Image 1: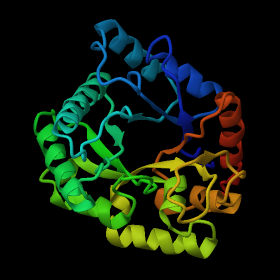
Image 2 (image 1 turned 45 degrees about the vertical axis):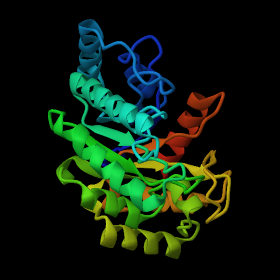
Image 3 (image 1 turned 120 degrees about the horizontal axis):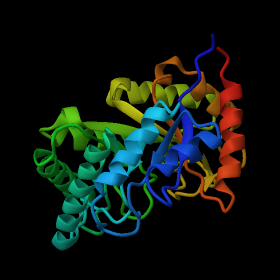
Image 4 (image 1 turned 30 degrees about the vertical axis):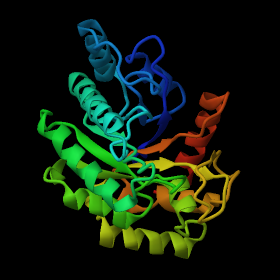
Length: 285
């Protein structure tokens, strides 16, 4: 019997975090990603006991196999402005607490932007703040550092920089990685050909290790390889051929890694339903 692949999309939590399960199932998800609060504010009130209970009941009754959380977009541990970096660390700890309360374990984070401080100093600072935050956590949530596109002053747009951040951390067991296909393309990885894809994944294994790959964001790219412009496109409408997404879906090394669609759209759920069905059809066995 063919095993159903771990594929899904980023789902709204409107009306309560528990509602994400029904929305995800309605478009064929076997996994999904959420924010646990608004992604445009630093903090929100704590999740109520009822909200937590509703979420756990929905999870227990659901066919969904895994849930990934993404942090809000304001967090920047690499900022040269101390006030912003400190606020970011506190906000990250708050996000971890929310995951702990919901029983969720993988929290995707954009590592940060140096905003003029310089990449090396920023990378060192990110690692220091990660350790500071993780020391105050219960040790049950893994921070999943996302590969970035290299737009503006963002860091971590190379496998080497992701590795550098983790290697500087004392709490390495709680640090993992997220591969975003759009970001990889924009950062300069040749993910637009079969040979390029295989070469990139060999690099990933050598530098980062497949054992530390916890999440994949499946996004096409509106911009060419090496553009350093982060613009997601629907599958088949950008520069990454559908054949590459088929390669990913059939790569046995990635079979247990949740694969999440993030393409923004006014009709996102309808788009994702079609794309999830397409990705499932790509799986050969």
